[in-house]
View 1 (cartoon, helix red, strand yellow):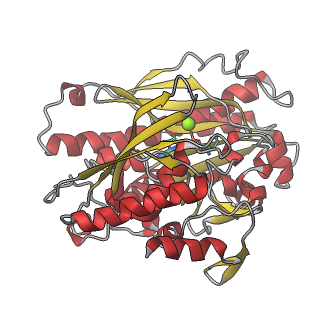
View 2: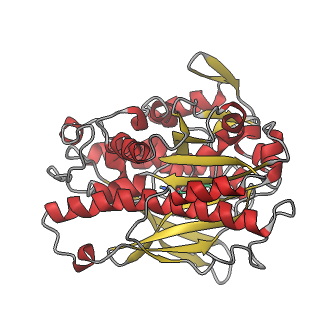
Length: 433
Ligand code: FA5
Ligand code: MG
């Protein structure tokens, strides 16, 4: 049944969302289940971990001059998501294997930066914050889901008033983070060049303000995370040491120089936020004059919320099970108590690839998601080889079907698995082994 449904969906001439019709074309690749996700608006639910986390961040910058936006529609134009930010024409982010398209010109935003231009144009305060759901075609595991959430921030100054920036820097509270930042005093390096229009001192001040702001927010959030981990009885020794963060150089088409901040958490560096000094062209496109300088950052909320609330699997954010939702309350960081687990059912799919039809592993991931929905717990490649004589390539993927909420029957898994195989054959002309 699901196969017939998706066929009908893909051959239809337009997709209608919230009363707007998007004519399909050869770019169209949004599977039907994404249309349910974009209606959920988890970041606006004050009793959902994502909503609680974004409230916590916003509360900490209240009164510091940021206008808050949280109602932008997830379907944006190619111009908003890519062109307005100076993405190169051949940037991988634009490809159909990374991004969900309704058609050539409309897509599910892949980041909150898609709204920078409109916010720079309309914000009445020196800064703004955006929270939103964002979408990317990605792998399937416990920390990746095709939908996640970001919080974007930006701030603008008049460039002749460097003392104002210094005053703003001084007004950001100090943190007790241990910060590793080889670029603090020399923000510009050969790999991370300056913009010609800015002076050295302007770059230094803007980037120090940016980094202090991000560090302040991270410290506030992780302070809470540590409290909640201790309350839950964790004896992890690092919980009593100061939190370590480090800055690494990064690249974004619309910022320069650019960085990412990583947080040391339970033995791993966790990438939390990309940021940088906004390119002048983005400001000019937003009707801000040559007299303006600015920074922007984008924090990923989901992985931080997983730590904060001790949530073991990113799919839980999207469950409709009340046993999940009943556990969270506005303004409170609580520790998730797992409810009963049901066994998984593993099935392999092995096939000979047809060299004439490109098959990206994300295509396979998405076919599994389309047919299995949230029953797809993980998909991993377990074997890959080229036949020595025929040179045909073979792959084998192992799919674990598992429900958070119930036992699965063999019959229903067989039906789903068969429809996965059928669609691989139909669309990618593979030969099932
Ligand atoms: C961006 O999306 C940029 N828009 C950030 C930015 C904003 C840069 C403003 C400069 C100026 P990136 O793709 O690295 O960058 O994602 C930002 C954060 O989102 C990451 O640090 C990570 O915390 C989170 N993130 C990225 N991909 C995923 C994913 N698949 N699942 C969960 N979180 C993710
Ligand atoms: Mg990144």
